[in-house]
Length: 340
Ligand SMILES: Nc1ncnc2c1ncn2[C@@H]1O[C@H](COP(=O)(O)OP(=O)(O)OP(=O)(O)O)[C@@H](O)[C@H]1O
Image (cartoon, rainbow, N blue to C red; front, side, top):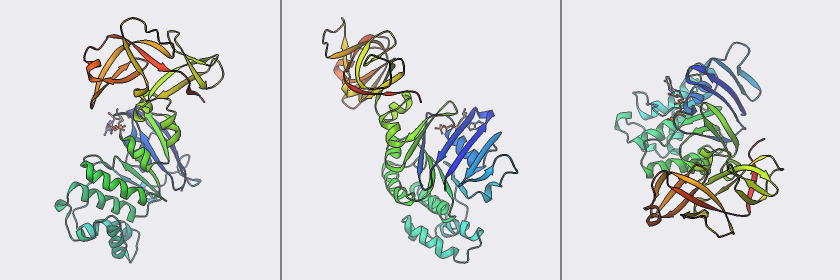
């Protein structure tokens, strides 16, 4: 099922446009409050969008005519705070198939509980489950309803690392043929679960593409951060990326002269210098001021306005926010267009 959705929830400042190909999984990334949950809620019909167009496999569910009621859309939302019904685990999972009039609802539910590794919990009540078990049961309940589209809002939130990892592995196979959107803060989810990635900021989708595209060629600082890259952006001029302030970083590839372009590189590839302008001509030196110092194990990420670098904690110890530094950006990285 191919999903095309454009939903506007004006009171929350959200106007999101997402497309998910049939059987594909889209990871919706973005900072807190960027509108990810609202977008899912509006698509599922939990929140009533002001304006919306939702098309499933060419059929308009919401648009110019009378909207298809949420319960008939075949779009199931697994919300962050999705509580199980106060009934046995088996009855929870059988709920969807029963509502659809299936006589074999019990057998379907047992099969789903088996698939999520919870067959032995069938007779338990929700209050007697761990967080990880409850999440597995909730996933089984959602999938047993045979949704045409499954929306998962931060399915690993609140789980410990082990439970999250086990459920991530489980979802990877369960979602193989399901059209799904998953909101997440974890780039690992984008890498392991998603075919495509869309990044939201300020209520809008600001970049979208295959997971590989977005994570190797990020267009926004947020996507670059998710991909653990530094986004050095500027304008192409004669084989170099010209940054604001005029520093030229020689690059390979890139769009035509005059167009906005960027290179995305790991912060470990950037060299930090303190003091006078460095002389080493093999690097393009960008003067910058320290905005933040972020500890990362034995290293500290020194974040400037334009560039960032990972350095030894001992080096960073002499720095404070506002300190003037030089970032040495290696030449020859692959540049790509930031527009279009
Ligand atoms: N129930 C609500 N009532 C009113 N405003 C809300 C409600 N839920 C969210 N908002 C607002 O809508 C905007 C988008 O929030 P939303 O929860 O969709 O973002 P999000 O990207 O899912 O954030 P997070 O990553 O923190 O879950 C925010 O400005 C938020 O304050």
